[in-house]
Amino acid sequence: MMKKTVNDLDAVRHSARFIREKVCNVQAGTLGLVLGSGLGAVRERITAHVDLPYAEIPGLPQSTVEGHGGFLRAGLLGGQPVVALCGRVHLYEGYTAAEACLNVRILAELGVRTLMLTNAAGALNPLFSAGTLMCITDHINFSGQSPLTGPNCDAWGPRFPDLSQVWCPRLLALAASQARRLGLVLERGVYIQVAGPNLETPAETRAYRRLGADAIGMSTAIEAIAAAHMGLRVLGISCLTNKNLPDCMARTSHQEVLEMAGKASADMALLLEAVAGALPGLDSAGVDSAGLNPAR
Image 1 (cartoon, rainbow, N blue to C red):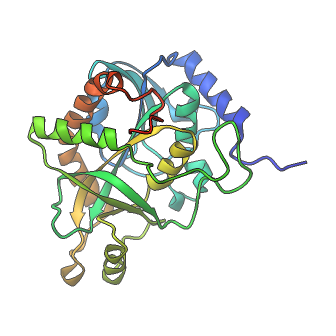
Image 2 (cartoon, one colour):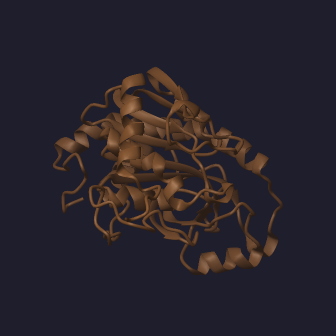
């Protein structure tokens, strides 16, 4: 008999049923949102909301990190239905990649087909400034783990999913147009995920930059892999909280990262609200609800 793993369809469906019963019945077009460190201003833009603590949701791992809210919020963002996960867990807390991606699995089982992932990240590109936002165009999973390790759940997706377009170009273009309308700086770049929790050395910073990364963090890439596995279309926005210049590396701390994320989270909130409000127009322009249109 095959050993059960955390990639257990029945367990994830049980979690989704519990959320439906306690909070909401997710309707077609509901947006999924995962909020990273210090980005509390985003959740405050969600109106007509109902909250559910993670501790009450069966099977959902609990975060131990400061800056992660630890609850689910269902409501409206930009007038559109949204289910937001306020806080996430990380590999460095002792979770496997599959456990860290249960949040995405549950959102997909609820019926979410468009997912926005956010994070606080360090800027590796010397042309990017701290306090600005970056739209993720691609990622490098340097964590050493994959949420697809172990037996595959065929109901979720194929054993060997294609990752050539994890980050939906149509959503990226929408975010860029909304940022221009709002007068916000929105960089574009490659995000690299490392395991953490230690911050990177000058030599590591040089190496990651030579790999082609523009920003670095300790989450998101594995969540994007799980989302792509399940056929979700994905938008990623990083809040650049510090600038990594290996030849004059400034000391930083998690507290400073949270403070900078808090300052920039207002811009993040404005952008995500605008993107959410514009999503119906994007769908009516020819992108199906699962984001699987070849033109995406």
